[in-house]
Image (spheres, rainbow, N blue to C red):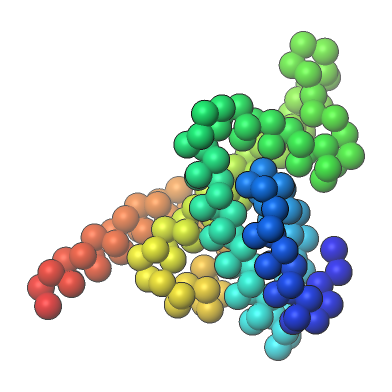
Length: 168
């Protein structure tokens, strides 16, 4: 995906909003997995827009999950993006080789971590507003490799903030 100018990045982001929920999820997933690494002065705008798209993806993902058939949709979504990213059909548990099944399981795990990090970012955004969009610490690429205790840390931060605001 060619990202061109700032205007093209913003236009791309705006174009997602004109899509159906299902098409929006696929488009945002494609965008989020193809954004180049954060380098140079251009990186701040890329990070900012990527974070916005990640938050919107998480919001759409959660909304879709609450709809009837949401769990099946999420399974089908993972199978669809597996095919688009790898060029291979998702394996059939009855007829695929062990290595094909193992590769698909690894892909699903990576995808689960990616979506989990986007959900973390959505939670941080709800708690701390736009400040999380500007700090590379909260880049979804970093959070997808977080420790198992990261959710506990986020919970403690939230509780600490509640206690601080109550004592003011």
